[in-house]
Image (cartoon, rainbow over all chains, first blue to last red; front, side):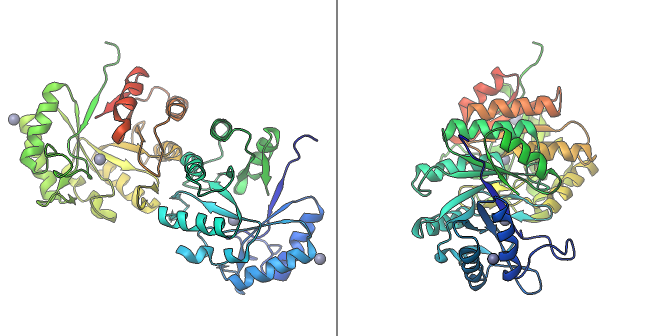
Amino acid sequence: MPNPCIICVAITGSVPTKADNPAVPITVAEQVESTQAAFEAGASICHAHVRNEDGTPSSDPERFARLKEGLETHCPGMIIQFSTGGRSGAGTERGGMLSLRPDMASLSVGSNNFPTRVYENPPELVDWLAGEMLTHDIKPEVEAFDLSHIFQAVKLHREGRIADAPYIQFVMGVKNAMPVDREVFDFYVRTVDRLLPGAPWCAAGVGAGQIRVNDWSIAAGGHART
Amino acid sequence: MPNPCIICVAITGSVPTKADNPAVPITVAEQVESTQAAFEAGASICHAHVRNEDGTPSSDPERFARLKEGLETHCPGMIIQFSTGGRSGAGTERGGMLSLRPDMASLSVGSNNFPTRVYENPPELVDWLAGEMLTHDIKPEVEAFDLSHIFQAVKLHREGRIADAPYIQFVMGVKNAMPVDREVFDFYVRTVDRLLPGAPWCAAGVGAGQIRVNDWSIAAGGHART
Ligand SMILES: [Zn+2]
Ligand SMILES: [Zn+2]
Ligand SMILES: [Zn+2]
Ligand SMILES: [Zn+2]
C-alpha cells in the first residue's frame, strides 16, 4: 500500500437540513455519533461545520469546542478540520474558532460565484485566516473552486504565509463555479504536480458529481472528500 | 491572410491616471484623438472606459454617448466596445449605457479577486447585463479572469442568454486573479476549442505581461488586446 487514500468525511456541510434528509447530523451529539461511524469505517479526517439549534449554519466557537472535545474522546487519532467557509459567518467571524487549534482548517484563497451569490474571500481576509492558521499551527486545506486558486495557494506558500506545501482540494460541481469536468480535473492534477511536486491533493464533487470525482481522484493517486 | 488578427485597443482603461503617464487619454476629446491614431495604425476594436473630469472612473451614459459620437465621426467602421467592468460603478449602473447600442460590450460572468478587493459579479447582475446586451443587439466580449468563466460563458450561450458563440478574452496578470502562465494559456485555448469549436477568442496580459500574452495569442491564432 504505497499511497493509502485519505478519506475526509464532511459530516454535516453548511447547506443540507433535516428537511432535505433526516439523517443529516445537526446537534453536536449527532455529529460526534455520525463521525464515529465514519471513523470506524475508515475515514481519517473530519471536515466540520456546526449548526444552530434550528439547523442554520453557525460559526460559534463554543459549539466547535464541544464538537472537538467529543471527537477527541470518541474518534481518537482522527484529524479534525474546521470549516472557515463563508456560509456560516462574515469576515473574521469565520475564523473565530481557530484558537481552538484544530489539526486542520479549510482555507479559501480566492473569490468565485456560488449558486445565488458571490462567495467573497477578499485578499485581506485570506491573509488574516492564513495568519491565524500559522499562529495556531493549523494545517490549511486550500479549497480550489477555480484554477487560479491553485496559483494563489502556491503564492501564499512562497511568501511564507502557508507553512508547508499546501494541501489543495479541487472543488467541482458548485453551480456558477467550476463544473465537474474531466479535462479540468486532469489539468488541476498536472498543475499541482508542476507547481508543488510531490504534494498530496484531494478532490470533492459537490452534489450529483460526488462519486464520479471520488473515483477520478482515487484512480489518479489523490485523496477523497465524501 | 486566412485569419487576420483583430487588434482591440484599450485606450484608457479604468486604473491609470495622468500621474502614472501624462499620455493617458482622459477627456472624450483626448480619447477620440488617441483612438483615431490606433485606428489608423490598424486597430479594429476600441475598448472604452470613460472618466470624470478629475480622472476617476465613471459610468456616465452621457460621456459614453459623446465618445461614441466622436468615434463614429473620426474612426468610421471601427467596432466600439463599452466596458461594463466593475471599477466604474456598482450593480446595474455598470450597464446604464448599453441602451446606446455600442457594437460590443465587455461582460464579466463570474467573480474573482482583484489586487485589493473582490471583483463582484453576482449571478443576478451577470444575467441582467447579458439580457441588456441581448435586448440592444450588442455582442459581448466575455472577460475570463479564471477558467470557470469560460464554462460560464458556454452555459450562458447554451441557455440562449448569449446569442452567438461567445467571444472570450483570457485576462492574465491581474494580481490575485490568474497570473500570466503559458500552460494555462494553452489550456484556455484547448478548452475554447473543445467547448466552442471554431469560435474566435482573444487574450490580454495586464501590466508587465502584456507583450508576452500578445505574442502567445497571435502565434496561436487568437486576437489581441493592447
Ligand atoms: Zn465545508
Ligand atoms: Zn462514541
Ligand atoms: Zn477595460
Ligand atoms: Zn479625427
